[in-house]
Image (cartoon, rainbow, N blue to C red; front, top):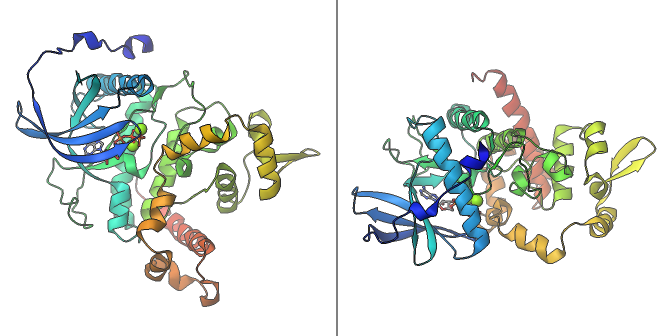
Length: 364
Ligand code: ATP
Ligand code: MG
Ligand code: MG
């Protein structure tokens, strides 16, 4: 079944058809190529066209994205009710595979930024969470794992006249859509081990344990907390740092059976007697280099493919400004407020407690 699903016959595309799209603007750029805002002369609408680099790896990834979205749109969401981006067309133009999508607006990271990283009210968080959950249910039914759920891949839909393009103000109800199925895979066919953007990466992926669609649910949890906090929950600077933050914030390490059966455990943990202990930074560095699967260059190349919020974060906004405007600042003793990242961390923990209290009254 999935063989059929993953088969896209590009020969069916009419290569000779007349020009249909006029490029108006560039919406996004990445390692894959560019996303252009185009005017569709046939339908008189704007569309987003992803123009893929003329290289086999990106081409193959895009073919997966096309086939997966076709299946999701046609079979699992024919009436466009489940908050998954619509794919409209695909074609080859001057040896570039091009995929057109419905035109959407800002992504949730941009929205958080427009809101000065202060976080949204619980009712807005709830409105977005419900919709993302709808999309995840459909993916689960389709036996699909998205593998890259993060705020950048959730876009505001413009079809219901949301004004979120121009201001941080959210007019209810605001519709959102999940995009970017370029890393998605079928459950039970999980070939890649280096997946998910780091802040949203699940423990089983970090540890190298067989994964399921639960990893998308982990990312969702991180996204939901970030929408409320305005700051990422686990802004791990490395995988080790990510694990350390998870353990700190969650108050315990992954269960022993998970650690015992994961192939990367040895990269991060030391086995003392029957106890797994997280290595300290220095020792971990040595271990990581001794046990690393990728070379330094390979690792860097793959990391830089992912636009990390961490990098953008403090480029666009000064940390002091975030802290000064952060609603939870009042809960922190003055002497603890200094210009280092730990303040953001402590604030996050305080805010999280409030968030969890709020969740009790959360009506899913
Ligand atoms: P990479 O992982 O190499 O960075 P990508 O797989 O993340 O690329 P997409 O997420 O599909 O690529 O698109 C990149 C950006 O283009 C998005 O973050 C968004 O800003 C913009 N974009 C994509 N699709 C649309 C759309 N349908 N409407 C409006 N903007 C879009
Ligand atoms: Mg993306
Ligand atoms: Mg992608």
